[in-house]
Image (tube, rainbow, N blue to C red; front, side, top):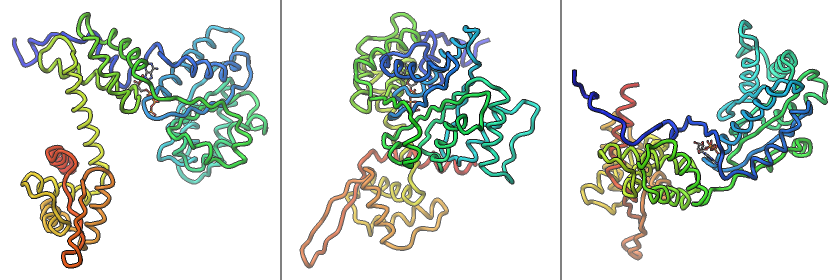
Length: 400
Ligand SMILES: Nc1ncnc2c1ncn2[C@@H]1O[C@H](COP(=O)(O)OP(=O)(O)OP(=O)(O)O)[C@@H](O)[C@H]1O
């Protein structure tokens, strides 16, 4: 029987999952120094001693999570192969949007025996959660590495970083040991800690710098070799993806995304080889995707105003003054069944913000004493992207 999928064969990919976000590379490339520092900080675990605490700093996509997974997996394997080494447990918790209580409770629940009831959400305090955490850690014994991702987003991080590292010396733990691994995008995180914590933490700091084009090329070649069938990519396509990502933020995630999206562009076009043009197309698609996310992040009325300017732009009526934008904005807001903002000042505030964020271009007009002084606005991006994104957002809201 023939159907819409029946004539499909795989032409480009040997294993596409290698280019996905959930893929964990077996080998970490171009991070030898960071791995060496990490190894030194954690190696005491093998000899029954407390590990050093580790703080990793670096912007998005620079390998902090990948290196951490690689190191903790390798350590687990090593511990398993040595009879004399204590058991090793690795726990991970993301701190974004969480309170200290939520984070400690989450760890407790992960440690509790399967048949035990969960730590209550209400009725007990953070101190009780810490006590339970210590009880469970000692019940299991061994060494526990706790990875706190986005640690800078945690409220009351000072208490966490004062309590946990000292739990053993303070007599809360007898049979188990703890090592803390904190991950942060914010290089100034340490400065925000209380001096008490700064003085006692004694952590190893490992800083992840942006990848240069050569380093990204190495990472991409390795992925491409695994992801594609033989002869399915041009070397220059890899060079181009690496160069584009290096020029931007030196982010490996972005480089891998460019390669994956480029390959998808090639596949859709029925091409059997990924070449520069596909990567160039991927760049536009990835940029559009990012732009859509930025539009989504704006408040509802800021989005209506952006949509208004996009309509005016399409009708060739820009640059335009805030008064005209306001009149048109009222129709847009009403068309989405929303009550428009009432004052010109609130529209102007949104316009100033949208200008500052790079969505709008603004020109100052000065017509002397008689004509007055005002601004004219036009869109600083393609109107089509704004209107498409707005339609999608409203469509999603209606289905919720
Ligand atoms: N040195 C490397 N070798 C191989 N793959 C890498 C390397 N660095 C990063 N990657 C890959 O790039 C992607 C992003 O890396 P990762 O998630 O580790 O970044 P991160 O620094 O933790 O960023 P974020 O703060 O956004 O989570 C992942 O797919 C990861 O496997």
